Image 1 (tube, helix red, strand yellow):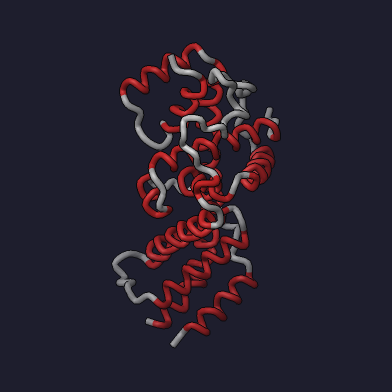
Image 2 (cartoon, rainbow over the protein chains, first blue to last red; image 1 turned 90 degrees about the horizontal axis):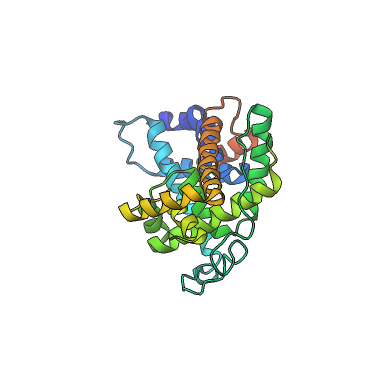
Length: 185
Length: 83
């Protein structure tokens, strides 16, 4: 049994790392969650061999990624960012008092080839770094990891309305940042 | 009639839950006559598509490996946690 477990890192380490990197887009954070996953897997005796070790390890890794986002969320109190009152002013940069766009959204072109895609990803990563941690955390879970909203609200202990508001702000900020910095052809 | 602000909120929300029948109708009408909000809709669709596409690419990119120093560190951690 112990022998099997010793092989997990060799057999699945690269895959788990790619899985984490694809979602977190940060090599150091990806290494950290892979380490936590491996330690949790070694300590935990619940692996029965019914599913493949990779499937089981990936399920643990997904939870570690959620845990990490939860930690990032706790860095700021939620009231700092979320104000669902009617006189909410956080969208004043985007809309005037009558609800019209101040700067109308422009066409964003999809990256066409591998080179453009690399450039696009660099811009996107830079834009994601500019988001407040909380917004980035929920955005990664919903729009990159594709977690169900219900699950996100439960795990992060926020209301559905707060989740919608936060995702709206994250997406609004990202698309604006892409407009300003990505000039695809 | 929806304002652009309200329409943009519905566009974002439609990515997270199905809109009600009346929300869908109001949004459809608004997008039909409003280029700015149609582009906003396209931007969000494009963003999500690119994100999930690149996520899958990184995940299946066999040239990306767990860095060897990280691997060595994890091996040491595992060894020190064993009974």
